[in-house]
Length: 192
Figure 1 (cartoon, rainbow, N blue to C red):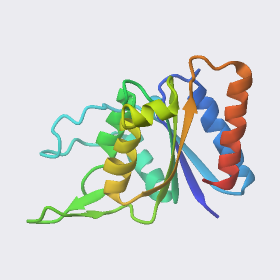
Figure 2 (cartoon, one colour):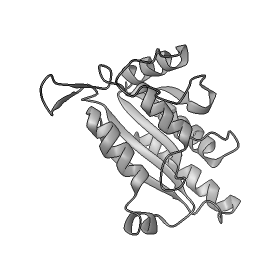
Figure 3 (cartoon, rainbow, N blue to C red):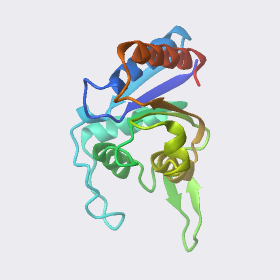
C-alpha cells in the first residue's frame, strides 16, 4: 500500500489549492493508498531560519510532526501557487526549517559532496498559475518548480515524477475549476 503525503503550501483556506488537495486525496484514497496531509498554514512555527546552518534552531512540535510524516511517506505531493515566480513565503520557510542537514541531506566531511537522505521517495508537484504554463516555462524558466524539484527534493534524493500546472486561475470560471478538480482526482487515483 502506497503512503502518500500531501503538502499544501497555500496560506488561504478559501483557495483553489485546498480544493486540489481534497480532490487528490479523494482519488488516492479510492486507490487504497494511505494518505496524510500537512497544511503549512496551520502549523505553528517561525519560518525564519535565523542562524542558517551555523547554529541549530530548535524545531517546534508541529515541525517535528511534519518531519515524521515526510519520513513516513513514499510519495510527496506538493500543492502550491506561484507567487512572484516562487513559493509563498510560509512554504519557503517550512522548507528552510524542515529540510535540514542531518535530516534531509548530510554534507560529507572535508568534501564538496553530500549524502541524499530522502533517496527512494518520489514526488509530484501541482502548482497553480495566473499565467499560461507555457509562458511560465519559456519566459521565466519555471523558477518555483526548479527550486522545489531540483534544488530541494532532488538535492535531498527524492525524485519528482510529475509536475502538473493548473491555470490561468484568475480568469477561470466554475466549470473550468471543476474540470481541473476532476483531473486532479484522477491523478490521485493513478498516484502520479
